[in-house]
Amino acid sequence: MKNTSHSNWRTQRKAVPVAGFSLVEVTIAVAIAAMGFITLLGLLPQGITMARNSAEMSVGSKIIQKLSGEMQSMSWDRVTWQGYSPLRYFTSEGMEISASGATGEEDLASSLTYVASIYIPDKPLDVVLPAGSSSSSSAASENYLRRVKICVATSADPAFDFSSASPLRVTSAYALVAQMGQ
Image (cartoon, rainbow, N blue to C red):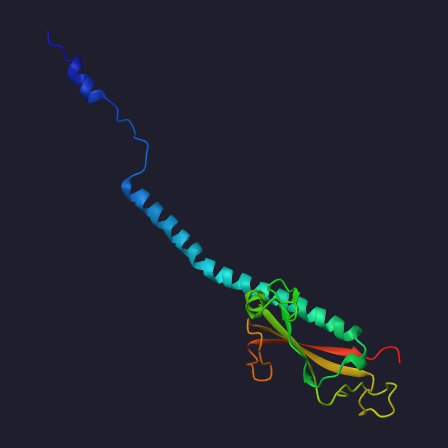
């Protein structure tokens, strides 16, 4: 008698599925993940630039608000200049630095980030209110209003010249100042 169970065992064995990923599937998955990471890394410089620009705009707005508030509360007798006012210096956080309080030129230059000035036009009475106002003629300028231009530049140069600077380097805002108490 011949034992056939051994040969039947080989022919009757069921195929067991093997769990796992093939090399092709792993390669495609790694390629997709790498493309995602490269895209994210490409966005980082753009995001950093946008963050820097928004920080500069925020600090510039803070400086403009400070100078505008000072001009609105200042007596007109103290406004003794025409054109650009003396330069004011600010740090990267918008805190004012006094040029006389700095111990030297190097100290001022090391913390200086913004330079600001207030421009008062040669014709200070350039504001005209609409018809029907208290003025006697509709084209007459108001004697108690003055338009000022507040200029802020991102510069570490303590001798920055606003009159010759490119308009792209200077952030400007206009404020309407009223004479009070007279």
